[in-house]
Image 1: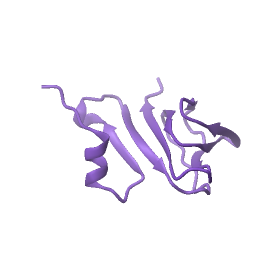
Image 2: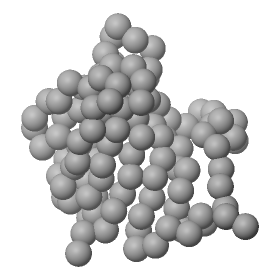
Image 3: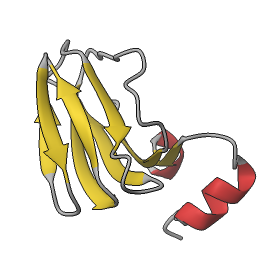
Image 4: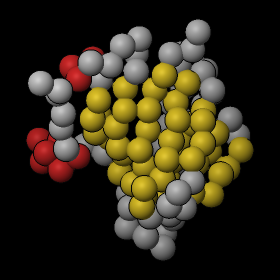
Length: 110
């Protein structure tokens, strides 16, 4: 049987979280591959993150901004971008909407 989950079921388990992992090693991902959805509700940037792997993003709903390596990117539904390994990045929502919903994935760097 193929393991699967739904975003609604993951959110129901941990409604207070903003980031929700949908796929990881429990669903068969290998070499650090992970995928999930984050719900950005703050209009301010918080502490940037950086990782040893690369991370891709795809905006599902809402509007916002991403600060990637010091460059600000406007986010609208359908926007996709990659963050190279070891690069600071952070996302916030636009004040005109309640939430910016973003799909993310981590992939190993060879």
